[in-house]
Length: 133
Image (cartoon, rainbow, N blue to C red; front, side, top):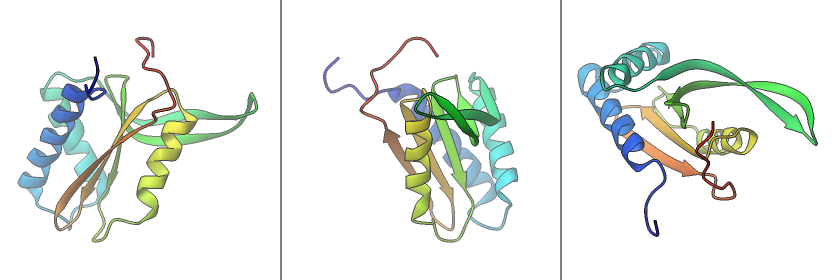
């Protein structure tokens, strides 16, 4: 449908879960793993399937050249990358865009558990939406 955001409801639920965890712990001070674990639990409570530390293949001209680790994949549809630093590194967005380009996923969300909560939605618009994952 024209004007409809890809994975809109799923991303909305991910972001709501992020704010729930952020409001519980506050920003900064916790290790990234604690935030990710709490986020996984919150997403599961909301009925999502969550896979953590997902290893995905990276190909170059049809040859497997490496594997990358994704923080989290929600419902086999959305990559979630979390950062728990005071300042969000400039490379964080590029990292998630790279993950989208190297995988079958079209939508990614970057969550920053810093002193002020921030989230960013990324879409690999070169890919066509697919019902199979």
